[in-house]
Image (tube, rainbow, N blue to C red):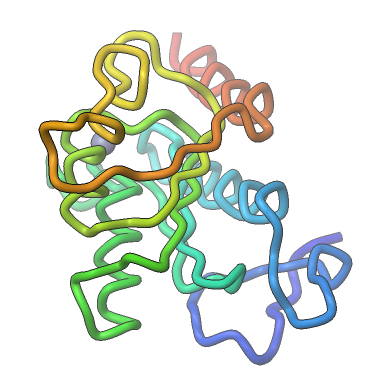
Length: 174
Ligand SMILES: [Zn+2]
């Protein structure tokens, strides 16, 4: 049912069902997470661990990205870092203090640190990562009073769907 590019958005790789848009074209957390899941699946199809991320401002999609560590042979090419870079390029600023990042898997320490450095306003996340998550599982870098910025966090958005994209990917490789 999805698949049509919605006219009026500037971001790339955007497929939004019209029913997911409210009157002023904003997407809610669930709809944004569905876009992140699409980006995750695309990453998996390219042989990367399927994690996807979306950047939103005022509910409008600025950018989407999937993990591209294998494809780019870049240890820093996690979905969150790619979507932060794309959002900064779109907005012309490193400071993303009115931006929400939506990601299918709890960010690692590198990505959580980048979210703090970008002054991101809010993070919406799907599945938790008990092994290396840095938003409550192993560390909590987004709510550490020793750092100069805190990020508002919403957890558990379409968590099962996000986790099943990952478990299906690893099951196929076993
Ligand atoms: Zn990461």
